[in-house]
Image (cartoon, rainbow, N blue to C red):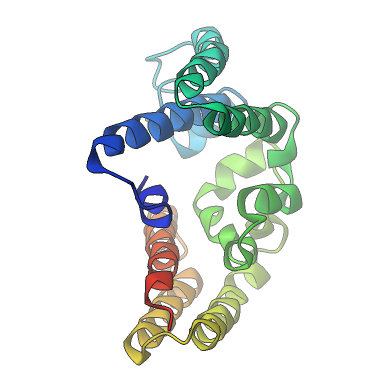
Length: 222
């Protein structure tokens, strides 16, 4: 939501609730679709989610997942053809990613999540370290499972290269460049030195913050 608001400035504040509602509705559809695919994985990695926590049965979640598709489309129609097309594409790609199995291999998983952002495509495996146990149980082939040591040790130089490269390309202030580098060093160090699940979860949060900082910094390009 924050990224959408930052990337596409609103014409007026009264539109903000509409933007938030639309984004959260589609996030709900995407998240429910994701959680009905491998409930066994969630039982291991994220036991507080509705299905493993027995707040919702798998059958109920499946019905909810498909009811949300026409709801998302109907809401989008109110905002015009471009929004409707965006909604339809999001629903389609969600189906391809989850039901058709693009999420089961690290190549298609990373590309589908970050095909438009090289910095994400080459570092987004940071999200997978915390989920290794559950991913292994369901046969998911993520980078941390296939190459556990390499994926941890290569994150630091890749992040540093992006930090320096983007700073030069965008000609950002020295302070922002230093911030990019410090965040990269922190993430890279944590991936190497802090290897338990809670630590990997915190590292992923820091990674998300670093991505948001980079996105926000485009406002300061000279």
